[in-house]
Image 1 (tube, rainbow, N blue to C red):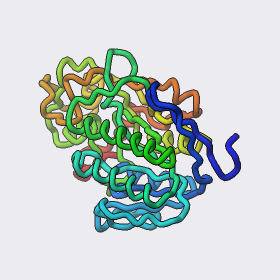
Image 2 (image 1 turned 30 degrees about the vertical axis):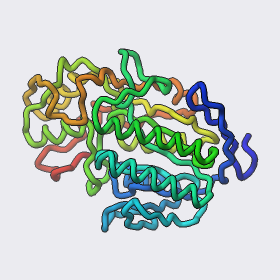
Image 3 (image 1 turned 180 degrees about the vertical axis):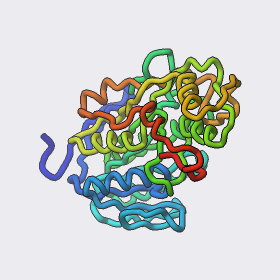
Image 4 (image 1 turned 60 degrees about the vertical axis):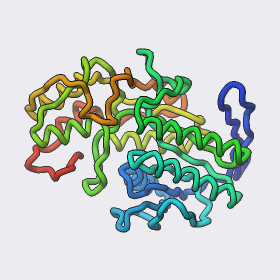
Length: 326
């Protein structure tokens, strides 16, 4: 068991890098979210609050949606994180804002924490999309092979966090949680999330033809946003989470996803080259099915949602707002 008030962690990076020993602060019931005005940031704030944690955070928006704790506006260049002995910093900033902003944020934050001399656990919400695919389920040890600018941004963020971990002698300890395709929106006022399923839902509501990229035979791991939050929180509240772990979901092929949405809303389907999907699809990405072996060894978690059951609960277009995905 960890020493009272502290956690001793072995961080194993690449096979040629010696382990780092980290002494981290005691766990508290306080969380600080960076990118608290993002889709992930808002949802995680509400779920942490439901778990009786105090949640503070920052974002670029002047008027963040009902944030449950202290919220401040930040340009992500200057930092003044309150000294409240936070158990975790969560990086929920949306990498879709672009490489320059996302990486500059991570570097400026880590430089600030280096000067501040504090030790901290840093949660980074990554993506399975950055991993190489060989037709097998993606494991935590699968190599990184980004396929577009968004994936290169996320991969670079992981590498910078690892570099700062070494530079700080293990005081800044990143924990990487790789997500699959997220669907749903528990907060109607929250910013809409990207991703294949939510894109299909928005197209279906707009009565557009649903495109199936390529042959539609590649697989995705689908997870409802509520299940993602609860799964990650369970991992973060264990004594010592893995340095990198997948958040698994349901396995569906691209064509199965499109057909299910089409049957629910009555849209036509067509085949395409996938260019209209932007960062949500790469013809070189292959399967993005996440292995859940490590995850299941650590926590006993049962998802609340299943994709097809959730789909039947999505209201008719007349009852939805522009981004009304529930």
